[in-house]
Image 1 (cartoon, rainbow, N blue to C red):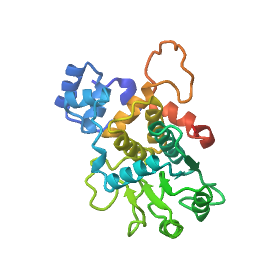
Image 2 (image 1 turned 90 degrees about the vertical axis):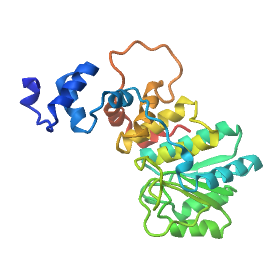
Image 3 (image 1 turned 90 degrees about the horizontal axis):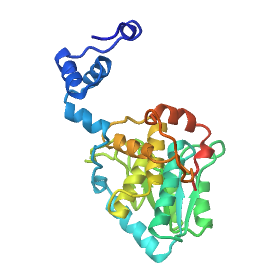
Image 4 (image 1 turned 45 degrees about the vertical axis):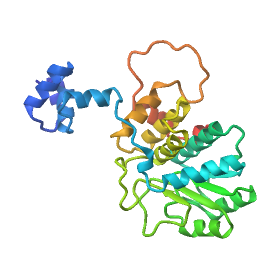
Length: 288
């Protein structure tokens, strides 16, 4: 039975009573939690346990189109000592995606020449500006990797090609018409994509690229924290592997905090407090 204090304040979506009682009985949860879960389609106790424990598997990153080309080009750049220029975005997801790529590439090849460019929100706006491409050229870069943008930057990426720069696009926004000119366009929303999770944020796409480069999910907890932060802040659905990314990211120490003993907590950190405390200002999120 739904408690009166809840029934008087909330209108819960209808759900089959038998399924609700089954979850209550097998999982030891209350009627409200059971009703919400069943109403959202979670009727099997094993499935509920899986999402609670963060056991959703991470999908094979090579199911993303062009990922093999992206991996090959990045490995070649690292092997040859080429300068890599990462172009992020000014929101939390874009900054976190750029930081994740910078950190991951420097771990793969200590001392690698990797720069990060975050566009000025007021002067350049959203997307890949000509100033960002010019900065890459002036820095001596030969490879540009976009983070959380680039899918609609046809003119700027054409300019990059004219200047002799190779570009890898990592983005999660919907393509508009033809894909931009690039060595690789890694985006779960590409037409005909078979990637199972279309709800990755920009940092999630960058994380999948690093997963492929490493050959397994990265061990560095800081990378998981960055992708968790971006997944929450960009308000993408906490479904599929997104839930596993966030759960593991929240399990580590605060991003940038030195190792130290911590007192026991009464309950695990939940996404809403992290979202409201970390979303503004974005400058605090640059972990470079």
